[in-house]
Length: 318
Image (cartoon, rainbow, N blue to C red; front, top):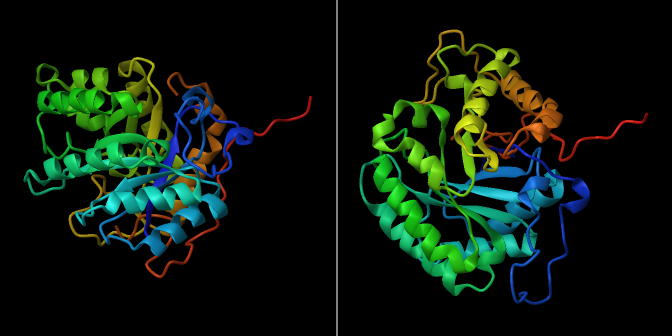
């Protein structure tokens, strides 16, 4: 298994609208293909690391598991696989499983320009594979390119605009996958707000474990709400997905440490954080716009804890 962290959107969906049958042939257009984003809220899927360059059978198995076991509708890619035509394999697996994909242009942490070839390879497949636009829900620049200073904000705006132009005929939205802190730490005159102004939807990383005020999951909601309100205030009413909501289950991950001595890392708190977010499903519906140690599976592919998140707000009598 390669499940990394949850993909949890902010606004909106009704479970009765989740799934349509896989058509026998590729439809003539994407008209009425996707649910309106204003009808989506709650849990919708998982982040999924592809650095292992999974085989077609592995992708099919994992995507079907996301869809059938957890009722997920989206797979948000994380990491990279530079094997030629790999995204074609992702498209086929997603098509067969009936899930959408948040595709990713991976910058990495080395300061190189390999992301350019990854971008070009992805766009070539998006235009050449007839199923790609029916599978690719959004294209992300990431992960956390502002936080990692992988690209200057104004240069990122240029890339976002070019991507939107390139993908306009396919009607695939473009976004940046990053934290509120990443935008906040970039000086205004360097273009952080311009990034938000130009993306189509917001893929927000909600990681209170790394806050300087972090402690237990039970105390995380004010930290989540602070970052969420910042995105609402600066996002122009755009759809908000919480595309990374991970919490460490162990401490000894090289280079990944909390910023608060009170931050607690264990499986119980990891579960408690997901439970906390799940308990706020009704609240998320009202919002305008709407690595080992991470994830619900351990390294043996065994669930760490029971996981059955809400995909809609339950109605009560009266």
